[in-house]
Length: 113
Image 1 (cartoon, rainbow, N blue to C red):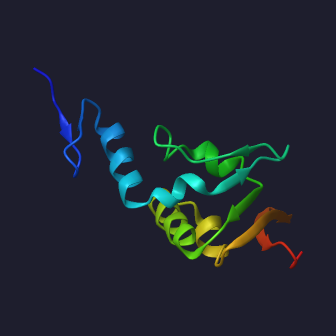
Image 2: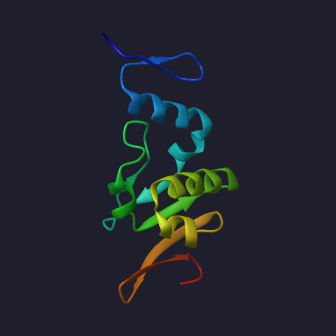
C-alpha cells in the first residue's frame, strides 16, 4: 500500500512534507525571492525542499525584502515556525540587519543603524 498526497492543483506526492511545501509555494511564491545572508555575506533563499528548516532562520544576519507581498509571506512563514524576530521586528520592505544587544537579537533597517 502507498499513501499519496494530492496538492490543491492536482499534483501528486508520496511525501506529506513535500506536498505541504509545494502548496505553500503555490500560495506564497514571494518567499523564494527574499534574499537572506549569513554572517559571511553569502546569499541564500528559502526553497521548497527546506521551507521550514530552522537553519534558514538561525544563520540569517541580513534579509532583503523587496515589497509588501514578500513581507506578508515572510510574516506568514515566521508565524508558522515561531521565528519571533522576523515576525515581531521586521515590519517593512528594505534591507534588515541583525544586531545584538545583550543576549537579544535586534533587527534594524539599513539607514537606522
